[in-house]
Length: 450
Image (cartoon, rainbow, N blue to C red):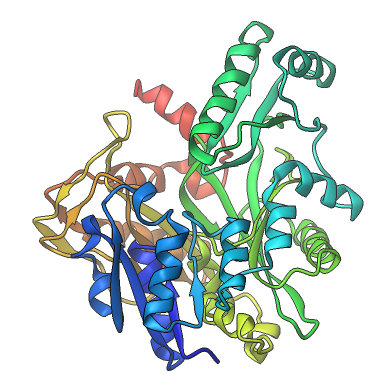
């Protein structure tokens, strides 16, 4: 096992990793920007190193500063969390060159699966169904011709995109060129790579992702699925496990496909394979693979009775997956609400500022992952998520009732949050019936005139 792990991230995921390290009797090192000096992860780590100013490009996205912090503190491993450098193959290579273990898959696998076009090719080679699409396209005229060949609607996707960036749906031929240019420019600005490809747009699908994890001892498993269809502009709002849409037969088919793929690419550590499932719940299509831990991993943990961050650390240290993980069976139902510092009734505008009062809910089956507290100032530089509220119950109906109760107990003053909007969703009959898809939120907002 490692002696000391540096956490190359911030916020709730950094705190989550630090807590896992403590339970594994591993020392932890927090890195932080000047804007995050008062964040809880800085306070609870065994050591903390400032790596630069507030903007992430000057701190959390600086590999040299993170490696220097690891060397200064004697860390023998780095956990990247999610976002930032978590899927950066070059950073994984740098860690290896510095003699520091990168807690994640190999750099070669990150390159293979982090590039969406290459990932699709890997899926095809291993019999995993994909939507009709294209290879990489850089020329607008060539892209337009291919879009007409595939048939509208299509989704324009940046090969290096993520978090909804570098993605544009196109329904009208006359809008294609401007949308293609916008997707490419956004991806170039955010990820330094403006290459795009096309996928046939599956109408009214569910967004289903399978949690996978594998070790260096030949164990390749999946830990079930999460339904992430409740989203706005490709940003997830509510996730649940298991999905209320798919059948057991579909679940088994998707699980087998996921395990087959990770075996073929010799994947190690945790990851997520994302799929679209059609409106009828009969067909599934590979979208992409995330070679890191996901924001919504707690719903899988609660249903499957495991701790994925600990398993990531153990696998990276060369240990086999824990027996209880290899033998995990689903129990109950779990729902997660991402609590964002945003005003949902003003175009989801970010709402940074000082939290004058923070009171989190509790009780049976309620978990809150957060790094904030009363008096904490939410900085303007980062993703707006300030907490994750996770509830678990014996049934979906119990979990929904528990989430309604927990959202009602939350008291946050000084900033706007997405809680009122999530309460509306939880109270809607469509959610209770599981009758929603990735376009549901957009239609709901349109009906409300927002």
